[in-house]
Structures are given as structure tokens and as C-alpha cells.
Length: 125
Image (cartoon, rainbow, N blue to C red; front, side, top):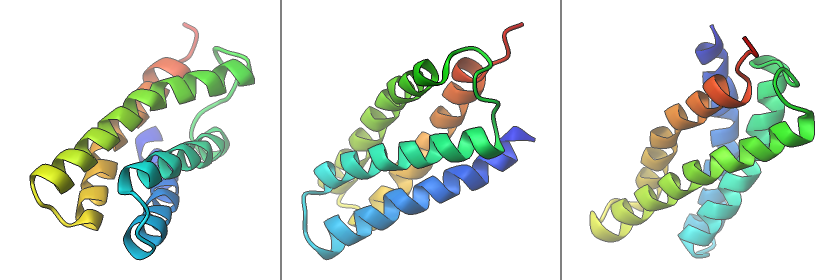
């Protein structure tokens, strides 16, 4: 079951993302939207490399450099969703910063899996 394996891969990437967010935004006071963007980008790389190791077959549809470009393109929408959720929850709903980050991360999980499973790593048939 790909989604179960992806849950663990996504969890590892989310740990990187949330850990960086906690350290730099919550603890050190850097702007949470800037930190959110940088952490999300780093976590996307972690997610890609773990995904091709444990979940998806790399090179099925595209060459690796094209595949990685599509991952970051798909992740761009995920980043927009992540930042939008963060901003709405923290600035407009008054949700505590880390709870907002957890909600944003969870909210983007299904988009990330779907874009990878049904587009980037989909079998050629």
C-alpha cells in the first residue's frame, strides 16, 4: 500500500519541516511565512529522496531531473496551500503558531501524495 509507506515518508519530511519551523519561527522569532517557505522547500527534497527509495519507482515516466522538476512544480501548489493555511489560521483565526503549522502540514499531505502518485510517478499505461 503506497499511501501507508507514503505516510511514513511524509512523516519524516514533515518532521524536518515542523522542526525547522519550531526552531526558527517559534524559538528564534524569524518570520513564520519565510521559515515556512524555506522549511517546506527542504522538506520537499527529503520527501522526494525518501519517496523514490521507499514508495515510488523513479524514472517510470520521466528522467530523474524532469521528475524532480515536476515534484517541485507540484509542490509549488502545496507551498501556496501551506502558506495560505498558515496565514489564515495564525493571522485571522488567532490559532497558536505551532498548531497552525501542524494543520497546514496535514492539510497539504493528501495533495502531495496525489500529485506524486497520479501524475509524477504514474505508470505509463
